[in-house]
Length: 321
Image 1 (tube, rainbow, N blue to C red):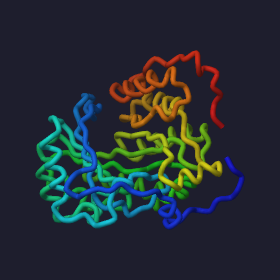
Image 2 (cartoon, helix red, strand yellow; image 1 turned 60 degrees about the vertical axis):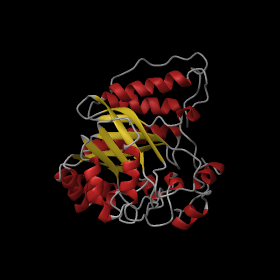
Image 3 (tube, helix red, strand yellow; image 1 turned 180 degrees about the horizontal axis):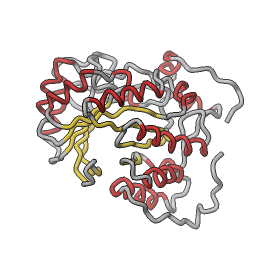
């Protein structure tokens, strides 16, 4: 990495580096799907995921590209229930539902408060509902929403990393103490927690990325998190591309994600999922990419050790620095 000192980046710098966002309409979610996931009870269940269209997150995290599928306008009343109804009328049946809004479910600018009762009614037939939220926006509304739903609520929060200096540079606007306090609040209300952890965020070498991701999963479990999703950090949001050009960022290797998953699933302390989206971009060996991705898929579904992939084409690949 470059030896040139780099100051903490501001909101304006991060936003100023962005490419154009996608054009969306409030009457439809921008995406939806049903996929299998190993549930907390050890049973593989179908999960309907609704990627809601709403106002973008109030925080300007350095690594985030989710703003691409959000709007600059406040979400109008009634739009979110309309989007959920649209999906439920079209997707096949599922046992669980995720309402992902690229930010904070309990931000009234993204999900109007007056819509929460109708949303709760729409999801009440599922076994559980999973929403995303920033740790600093966790409060009484979480418990109120769970009571309205009458089903298990799970709140997904971005820890990103338990390495405090890196966390500060991500412009996440929180500390690990903030995360731990949010977990404590949710657990007191019997709300389940999952968290997002980055593999090799900016300012991190390959080996540091693996080590710190493993330690971040450990920290999350110690805070009471029951499910961790490990996400390889991707370029493409503007500011990461700039950092990559001057040596402060490089995407992790697929084999590094395997290493993190092998270690953390072996603990059997909670579920650990690898984010499988567009994983082929993280390998430089086409010969074993498909097998490695399927191995990670099986780790996700079983949380049990899988046979390592022995590839004659990349076995001499040196470890990252």
